[in-house]
Amino acid sequence: MINDTVGAAASLLARLLLAALFVIEGWSKIKGYDGAVAYMQRFGVPGALLPLAILVELGGGLMVAVGWQTRLAALALAGFALLAAVLFHTNFADRNQELHFFKDLAIAGGFLALVAHGAGAWSLDALMPGGSVSSFWRRPSPPS
Image (tube, rainbow, N blue to C red; front, top):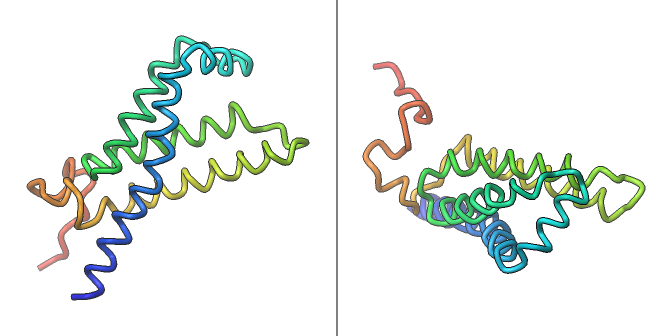
């Protein structure tokens, strides 16, 4: 059906658009490691957390892009976006920081939609038995 195809394509495009930012940023943190540590420390965030940030951004971004364990990765990335908003973008006197704050909230919302609805038909999750990472994430079967 055309609606199924449109929905699957929209889900794929949504995943790719959300994931792209995090894959690119994770990679840039690897390439500019010292600068990323300095930026974090300027906001009181220990530089020792940078490897975890890279893992979440790069690993989670790739997982969302291919649609593998999407709900789990999207939950981690939603949390990451919310933390980034609160830790780095609360200077509302600076309009740019205010925009970054609300952008991060919007990104978290997009990831939470993935948590709620899954990766869609064109994903590795859809190919897995049960179509989900665990029974926790599956919707209950309708009563017979």
